[in-house]
Amino acid sequence: METVELSPRKERGTERGARRAAVVVWMRLARVYHKIDRATAEHLRAHDLSVAQFDVLAQVGAREGITQKELAAALLVTKGNVCQLLDRMEARGLVERRPARFGRGNHLYLTEAGRGLRNSAVPAQEDLVAGRFAALSPAEQQQLLDLLRKLDRSLDRPTEE
Amino acid sequence: METVELSPRKERGTERGARRAAVVVWMRLARVYHKIDRATAEHLRAHDLSVAQFDVLAQVGAREGITQKELAAALLVTKGNVCQLLDRMEARGLVERRPARFGRGNHLYLTEAGRGLRNSAVPAQEDLVAGRFAALSPAEQQQLLDLLRKLDRSLDRPTEE
DNA sequence: ACCATCTGGTTTAGTGCTAAACTCTAGTTT
DNA sequence: AAACTAGAGTTTAGCACTAAACCAGATGGT
Image (cartoon, chains in turn blue, green, purple, red):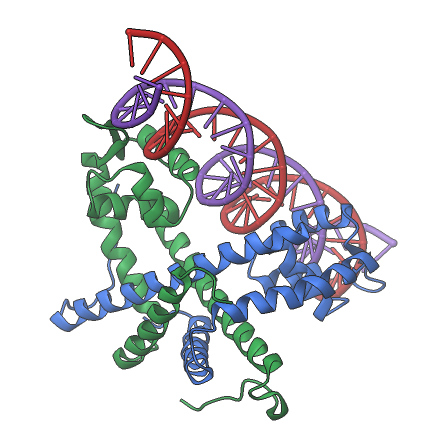
């Protein structure tokens, strides 16, 4: 295995420190993500839903008529993944694919069952999340949101390292 | 950075408002996590490593002699998952399972190949993460870390919902 | 009209992950 | 010592997810 090209910067002492600091933040963020994700997965089992399926239900419910491509983009997953997810959920009668009348692409809609499940699962899910964040005051949550937003936006801009 | 309202004024301080607010923070956190996770996965392919394998390599390298159970706990995954992961990595000659001399459990060690790979992959990975967090100043990263730490610690405390 | 291309969507192979059942053995009980 | 128990590790079934190849209908240029 070859050595990988490191970024062409000079190894100044402060850079090393900055690198460490970022890694620590990232590890903590990943930890928090995992814990809450696990907790929601466990909770959603009461509705016979996986987290992925819940996400589909929530997104499609919020934006009916969305296409598979758009859904994949919204969920940050591949179209292949969305396709398989929809296969299962359609077979279970939760969502419906309708081919576009003009142009290409399938439009997605919730069935009655899907809407019903969504209406019960979404509030429960929100309650759970609210509970997990309850340790932070509203002001702290706002602060956290601000930081995450700034970070998130910077991630869209093509590599500015 | 300017503060953005979380929700319409009329919901401020209400249960509904708090619930919404937490959900918004959570969605943003999940988004950030996904993006960085994807970026690291892509980057690690240069070393023929998945994120999970990288994590194993990093953990075992940092704490040689760790048991599988401890590793699973450190990575927040099931022991079954660790077992499979180790199967592949052992087959590839990166790690080694050694049955405990006394008591039960396997102790884990990196092979020479594993150590070499770790030594090249870890710094590259840290550079990438540092780059992704570069949009935040050191002070902001500290702030983010503080909030995540507080949140993380609260998640360990048995359900206070 | 014809062909080339583009682009949603589908399929497939391979990893990651969980839950749950199972194995094996160390340490304990009787 | 024989049997029981508990705990680390393994196995299995099934969903999630990606990358990459594939398919088919739309679009567009000549």
